[in-house]
Image (cartoon, rainbow, N blue to C red):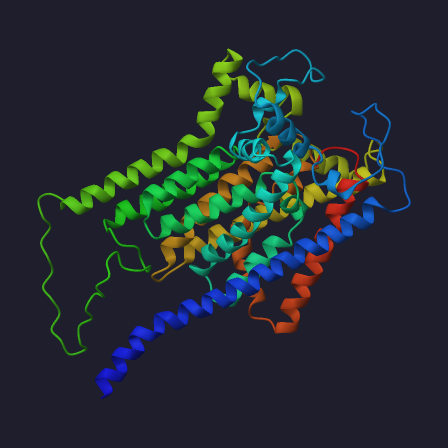
Length: 454
């Protein structure tokens, strides 16, 4: 009787765990929706406040009546709408920043072409972008939770996902911006690589590179996971589920230890197949962004066409952090060229980069010290963060956009979330609530008061 009860318990336990995880995911999606609604309400209040709209120095037309819907398609959203309505140009003109009819070539194709598909089916382009962002945001927050769930406790993983949703400039998770789609692809690619579903993980990483050039970070994460799996020489994840339906037998405590196996002269066929999948996944993961750069090079007639367009139209180039240091000096020295609003944004940009560097240092230190069966799993998420932080800190361009660059860096929140999980429930709710309110205010501020790109 006891043996039958134990068998039933073993069969029911996975169902209970699945049910519990689904409940957690349901609460997570509800909380995510609440954070987004708060952000939209604050933005709506800011748009309809009794103040004139911000003076856009690049727009000489008469200011129109403000609209929350239009603000959700501001700046990069406007470029995506143009791409959805008209497609990509067939040439690249690098004459003047004001002659920017071919500038949309710098935007990778997955997000705007998904918008275009819905637009051709009859949906307004901006509405299509907002719909894609909403669906991708829900997939992204669950993906962030799934990645965190492999590394930290369930409550800490929930907090990591919510802190990501309530981070600075996450207003773009409600806009026609590509961050939500990118994070969804990145998170699920890393989650699948953890389980060694190599080809699917590589495909998602490829798509992330066709969504944003920061797909290079996803490629680094997949490459790190592949390197660890290759060195481990196993075809099953550790400590994920087994690759077949038959549970592996566990020896009794008093059973004799099996003799060590001698190495075979050649790897078995299954290992060879696994190595082929690993290699293919790494190639796919690394090919996303370079594929688009190659396409722009062919259209533009020069090998560095994508980089040249970035520098001409947005002043974006890799300067190894010189612009960040210059921004820090201007902020700390109270440069007279900055007005009050500019000083707030410049300070926020500096604090964002400083926080990213400090959190990255803590993540790398933890990955180095990690022990146990999950130790290896920290290195792919750390590699992802290293590339993102290096690109954000080392690139010049619009300083205000650097706060937005924090949005894909969800792996930096794993350790703060684990620390927060040790606090009381009131403290956890308070921290997430305050973060959501501050995020909502800052997003509305950047869209309704700050007159430049975000």
